[in-house]
Length: 434
Image 1 (cartoon, helix red, strand yellow):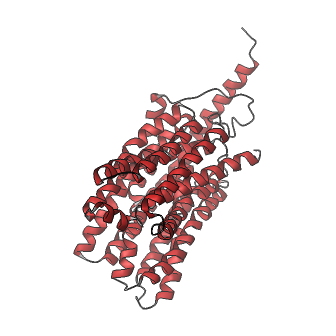
Image 2 (image 1 turned 60 degrees about the horizontal axis):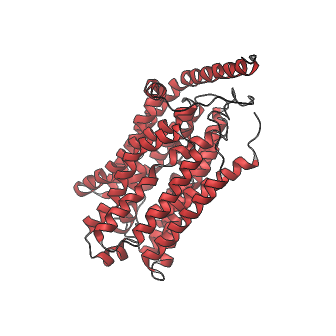
């Protein structure tokens, strides 16, 4: 298979910036909570409803975005998503009262469910053997966007106000919409698949309900869907509660929290690339490679977190070192799950498959912080974080091992379907004109 072109890497760069700035914009709400609450004179419950509204809107729209991406040009829809991001953030910035702010912030969830089409389009630029690494690069934007959002908020909120920060990120969204619209070309669905790569022309394949419903007959994919609900528990528990845990139960100062979490988040970000690259490496040797990497990583993460959480609070240096080592393994599964979804699904329903995965993950993401809070009220945050993360990682490892057993057959089925399409395309190209 030919190496990815320079233009393909340009597309990755554009989408990296889109995802990085979009994640920063989504996560700005945390560091800007205090001045926003002060502006509108609202309670913590009212402020919590702001984030909940955006999460609900995003979750509801995942299936709709998935359908649209599989039906129409993904590049233009991604440009639209970026424009919606920018314009809704602007509307959020000019909201004169809490009611308007609540509604406009909920509207920012419209574009939060736009990533399935991005990953699907990338799958048509890069073949199966390198997708894990590419998805790992793109998924770096989650933790890096978190850091960028925190830096922007802390640096600018007292200078230009929280509204000014939203004006900046909203404007960047509109600018990126223009770049994506004019700079990113649509690719034929399935173009990078080995069976279709040497064809001069590929038939146009779009969403149809029969193929979409067939997703729920792919056994390894069903396991990944189920795993997705539990797989987000650790990440969402940690992001919601770990800062508070360090301050209250380990007695860290604000500076100590920052000095602990900043390097841990940076190491965690690198884990996406390392995990995706390892998944590609082993996938080239066995179709079970990605799932074996994912299952092994979550088990290692569970053991390391158990050791880390047992370190005495006064030994901050050892805790930092072990936390960073643990953080490296936490994201290994993510790029391999994304790649595995596309390893077993036809190109015209890949956005739909990813949208189903994200929809299920959204339910888990909403459940995890509440569950952690309930356990923490009854016991401690230490217990809540440890029990939730370790138990769900062990459960996910079992799902990954089962998927590893089933996935070779599902991959062979997909490759046979694509090979049949390739033969049909060759026959059509060689047939005499009517």
